[in-house]
View 1 (tube, helix red, strand yellow):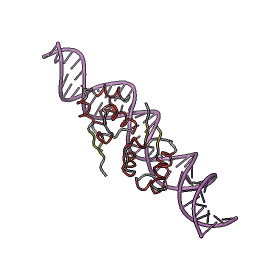
View 2: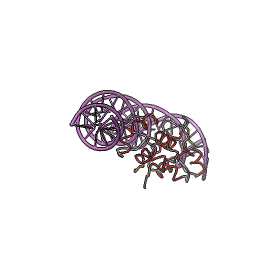
View 3: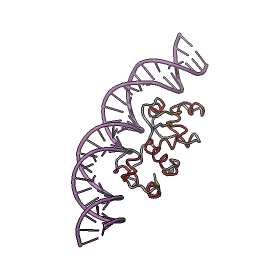
View 4: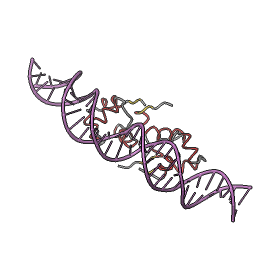
Length: 64
Length: 64
DNA sequence: CGATAATGTCAAGTTTGCTTGACATTAATT
DNA sequence: AATTAATGTCAAGCAAACTTGACATTATCG
């Protein structure tokens, strides 16, 4: 799964740490997702979409 | 998190087993999600939304 | 009623998401 | 150049998602 987290975060002027706090996960989790080490849980994906005022599938692109 | 899986599945005339196969998980996983034992992964949520031609947040309702 | 399909549930095990803590690298500021 | 902020990454551990296998209960149907 690909994602546009880093871009969205930049557009909204958040550091990884600030974003982590805003969605209540650790900074390492945000970093790992940006680096596509793993995918977020559904709850985290929802929180991120809401924070950035967009749809989950605008952030997370899944093919197949 | 609440969800409308059971209703959607009924509307589309799927058995739990058929749905499980359609989204490539076990029947028990579908059952557990319907019974709200746990939430699906993001990938599974996306597959379900696509199969039912709807949005993730139309199926999975998260508050807070 | 009796058979079969569908659903519910439990246990045990694997994988994945996420945590804390630590430290190294890179970018920004002074 | 030196300090600080931000990011990258690793390890160890816990929790949640998901698996297989088994069996019990509830619907459906001949």
